[in-house]
Amino acid sequence: MRMKMVCADCGYERSWMEYAIKCTCGGRLEIKQDFGGLDGEKLKALFQKRLAERVSVYASGVWRYKELILPELPEENIITKYEGNNGLYTSERIRRSMGIRNLYFKALSENPSGSFKDNGMTAAVSHGRYLGYSRFACSSTGNTSSSLAMYAAMGGASAYVFVPESGISMNKVLQTWAYGAQVIRFDGTYDDGISFLERKGKELGLYVCNSVNPLRIEGQKSIIYETAQYLNWELPDWIVIPGGALSNVSALGKGLEDLKQLGMIAKLPRIALVQAEGASPFHRMMAEGKDRLIPEPHPDTTASALKIGNPPSWPIARRVLQLCQGVTCSVTDEEILESKRRIDQAGIGCEPASAASLAGLNKLMREGTIDKEETALCMLTGNLLKDTDILRAQITETAIMTSPLTVEAVQRVL
Ligand SMILES: N[C@@H](CCOP(=O)(O)O)C(=O)O
Image (cartoon, rainbow, N blue to C red; front, side, top):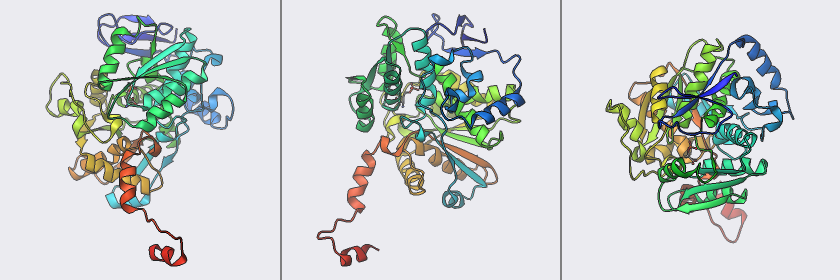
């Protein structure tokens, strides 16, 4: 077999054709691929050819890289919405204002359900359906649940989503519900929901689709493959990502290791992981040089997707940062909202959590960690329309209301 599931703690190996989100020893599970017989240059040519695909599964920006994701899953079991294929943008105005040599934005927000979760979810739901599961579940602040609800519906399965009763974006809950998921609201945080599913999911016959499921990470790796391919296999010096549940850093690291091992990239970029100040247990652990994460019991930030106080995959994220000479930082809600305004007004747009990446880049440049002669890429994880509470509050202060509508009234605002 080309791939297996391995416990990161005790090393116990399972078949990829099993469902598990935790080892019996309590350790996190990871997929290990055997790339023997694969040639990086031939893969590049194959992936390039597939950019012309329009209707097959290979038109997906995830399944284009099937050989590196789930090589043995039969094609007919793939549930896809042509996810990935997300734009890579520049904004000369933002770049110039920061004085950095080169700056890119990868708009994962352009995925079919509006967030980066789709890259991993297509892999997890396809895997679960292949194993015969028909009931899928997740704990979520709203993006994971919308993505799961969409793919479960596409695959003719049911989704049960556990979402905190307060402090998350109603737009995301509505989107989830509209796709036909059973929404289970509860008093608590994402952390309480994931802890419940880790303990009780199996007993309830549920296939859990949070990023503790290693298949999610396998799909999510495609984000870095696609980014590298669009940049002709030369990544910028820095990749800056927002950090909540930390699945992005785990997936990014895994994808980078794959590309390096296959000789498809020459050097690893450095990763900067940015957390919101009120929900930054991982950054605190790293900054204080501690070897265990101390959970934040009341995560609090305007960037609702980052309201996570006990990210389950922190040991993997820490390993990735060590591998990539990574750094962490935290930013205030004000810094996040100011960066969001700049990204929105550049015509790219994003939800508040995504803007933590630009806010973090700004801070790391100010502190001298990132030099203006370097190049950087900010990952934008969710769509502008996903979380609009802050916009609703702001528009009432600035939009012009004129009645009756006359030429004179309009001339006053021109
Ligand atoms: N912000 C996330 C939290 C869930 O993270 P996951 O990595 O476990 O999927 C969300 O959208 O729910």
